[in-house]
Length: 295
Image (cartoon, rainbow, N blue to C red; front, top):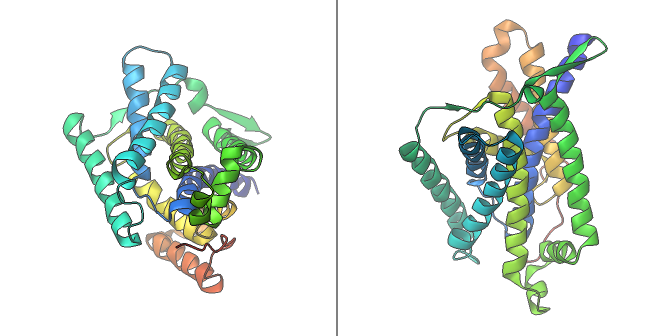
């Protein structure tokens, strides 16, 4: 039982990071129909931002704040420089653009800093663990679970209580009508990308704290996992993105922990088979997003 509880906490921790990333993808997709695969590079920018500020001798709190602000700035710059010009293009064009932006950022870091990981030393309390009964729980695990819950609550408040949030929800329903009502499309989309950047930045802080390093490809695998989570949860559904992230985290950790040793080489195949099975039973995802009417 202790092992099961320990692995459940690990699964929720990993799932929380996937959920934050998936939530960022879902916010943008719900409005502009874009799966932004450069979202992972926003994580990478955060990691290098933290590394640079710590290397300059500033305190960790400032480094984390700078990293998250760099994530927001990067996400909004992507929207302004790359995706705004492609607005109205077909899905394939947007997808290729996001891959191109991703590759450009990776090459810039590889050429400008290093292709190898650089160490990011965060304070001990982030890497420490606490005992809950007989179960040892890492602070990153606790923060991951707490942060995703707080982020969900905050995002829900923004979307339901603020004028901009209500406009974003309306845009997700019918973007063309929102524009006809005189609401600035640029402002709505830029806000969506800013929120996406905040979520990616927070996820990056947790990821870096658990890894202790950053490299140019740091965000590549997590964003692919987040994309799977958004599909499993339901494209365009914010709640579905979170559910999908936790489902993916549970599947990965449980398979790693409880599969017999002779089955471990097939772990990824089994995990993908479970995901495919979920989509066969629920083709639109576990919590499908609202159907949108685009012109």
